[in-house]
Length: 112
Image (tube, rainbow, N blue to C red):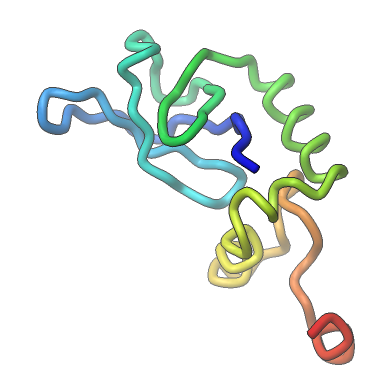
């Protein structure tokens, strides 16, 4: 399933005459094209689908959407295990809106 997922713009640059951004999806950072919403700024939230920002979204709506997706279990399906990997690589708990927590000990063996 492909979802339109909210993310926060971390940085913006021009690449090959195309406005691009690094966008954070709760710990997973992806390159995103901003051509459909050229007025996006660093710190803004956008709805992103298949690598394209489609519209601006306020922070509260973005967080509510990520929480809803987490409750439905679709974030892990959309992004694979990158959410947990990013949290583990950072030595942190999995951020809110990013699915189930990292596995440890017997829990890890039980889910395998």
